Length: 120
Image (cartoon, rainbow, N blue to C red):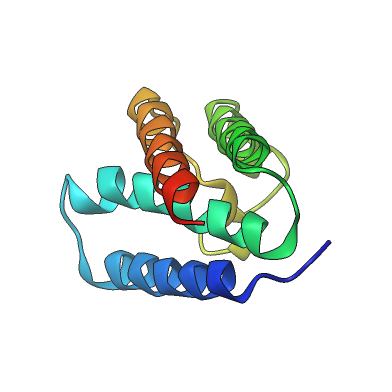
C-alpha cells in the first residue's frame, strides 16, 4: 500500500465532475454515457492513489468491479437485500442494468489506460 498524491488529486477532480453532472445535468448523453466513462476513470485513480498495482492490473480490477456491480443490477440485488431508493447503498449499487453501461465502462478504462501509460 502507498499514497500517490497526484492520483488522489485526479480522483478528487473526477469526483467533483461526477457530482456536478449528477446534480446539474439531466440529459440522455452526458449523464448516462459520459458519466459512466468518467466514473471508471474516477475509480481507477482512487485505486492507483492507494495501491502499487500496475496500470494493467488496476484497469482489470476496476473493470471487473464495474461489471460485477452492473450484473448485480441485472439481478435487482439492491432490492433483494432490502435497500430503498435514496439509500447510499442503493445509489452505489444502482437499480437498472443496461448493456450500454458495459460498453461505456470499457471505453472509460481504455481511455485511462492509454493516458496513464503515457503520463505516469
